Image (cartoon, rainbow, N blue to C red):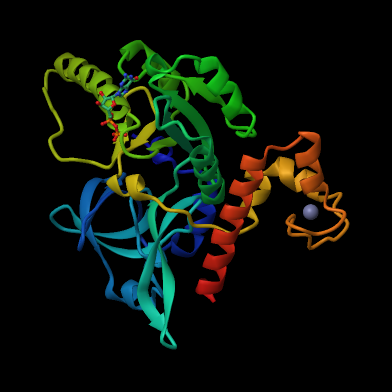
Length: 335
Ligand code: GDP
Ligand code: ZN
């Protein structure tokens, strides 16, 4: 196994430069517990804690390691070690912890990073009665603000009368993200996910409860376990893994993140993130009379005009406003 198998790239080589001569090992956090971490290094898996000084230096939870992070570890005897530094993340997923801290008597939203360095997110949505295009829109915004790429999986195709129609509606709002019709209960459909897996790339699933994420994960892990079984028999050692890892390295390359925190994600980001997920509205807005147009009651608004001509649906504009208000609100609380 190499560092690259676990997602190492020139980006991190650059970030570890200050520690090049320290003798510390680059290590990938594969599981995070309250007081210790399980990491993978070129010298094997270690159980590590972080040096007190990191905890003191950390302004907030944002600076503490999470699953997917690369850290610099000083190895110790007995497969143990100390984390001395956290390498800058390529991407990160956060959630809000409202009211955890108070500044000047005011509640402040605190950001908690729950996963780092994910490359590709499958946004899973059910095509049953829960189908909600606005929710998919929100997840797309969230993914774009994390720095990861997105693929939309429309699951439970069997429960939908006109899946192609739903797919077309999602494609109209998904920008560059591919959209697939899916049926998690059929094992061969998992190939859609496996086709996106590449050595060193980390994928994760995101979506509301009940959409089929566990069914998909179990399906993928089931296939993986069968392969690992075959490998073990071949080398005669019959090794198997018992501890739960939140990052799973697949035999054919690729890493799957199975992180419970990802299931409870809420929106975090900036108004700029809207530019990507609502590029249609932002494009229209270029023709508004006022540069600070809110697209509500302003004269000469190209966005509200598009409503009249049918170039924009009112649902989409409503969700744009809702999301924007939420993000602005968050921004004020952050100050
Ligand atoms: P999670 O909460 O997102 O992890 O969702 P689960 O994987 O637990 O799935 C919720 C329910 O949906 C379970 O009863 C699954 O069997 C069912 N389910 C998952 N995929 C499909 C599918 O493609 N079609 C149908 N009809 N049901 C599915
Ligand atoms: Zn306008």
